[in-house]
Image (cartoon, rainbow, N blue to C red):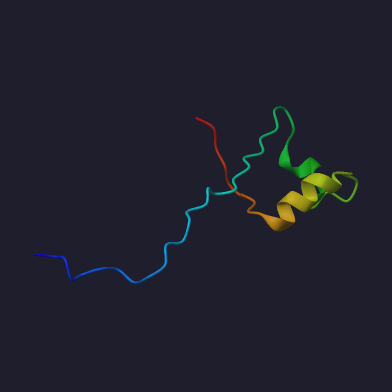
Length: 61
């Protein structure tokens, strides 16, 4: 019945998302340079923040 209906589109392999969730315990965000602290020396965290998504309002319940 459906023998003549073949897909011609090439299959694209599905890739897994590249997600890194970075959470720091007992460190307020305002201590990080990526959140505006001029004295904070956090170059690796700043690079991750620059290339990713930062949250302005995050809550733990």
